[in-house]
Image (cartoon, rainbow, N blue to C red; front, side, top):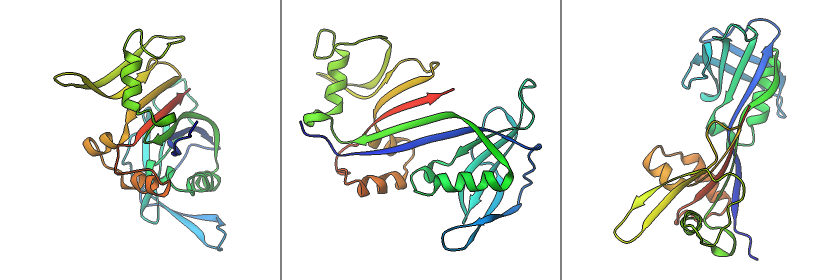
Length: 228
């Protein structure tokens, strides 16, 4: 059985943290890392107005390194029953498609004496052109939605599909398994079409080329969204 070529990635990472004291991150602040990289250089992080919301916190900033947004930090929780020293950090999406994201996250936390407690959201993704034995993802979705066809549904029968009704048949480009309110949600969707219609992300396309996916054809994504 031929295994299709695929690219594996983390598309969303958000961590719940705590700090020794209530965090202080004034705008335009520059933080020089106490720890050098493998070349002996000390990274410099700058604090800017937030470019992406971290819900549930009064204070929010964007941390940049070499002019690029790397982290979105929220602190001082709005809910009174949460520890006032709680901090929530979301890694910027473009950084997750590089090999530096873990080191940047941990280096910033070490310098600010922020301690990671747990992952609050993690999205694991697999991008591909086709499934096993050349099965096209849209064909799988169509057969899955047709009662009495090829696939036996085991467990929850909840799903949501999005497509386009044409004259003789329906074209599907999105299928969600499970409820958005559950701790695990699974998506199968046409990533190429999403990038074309909503917001293009050249860094993802570059990773597809490095993974030797066929960018001349639609790339589909199977995504597991885990939250606590």
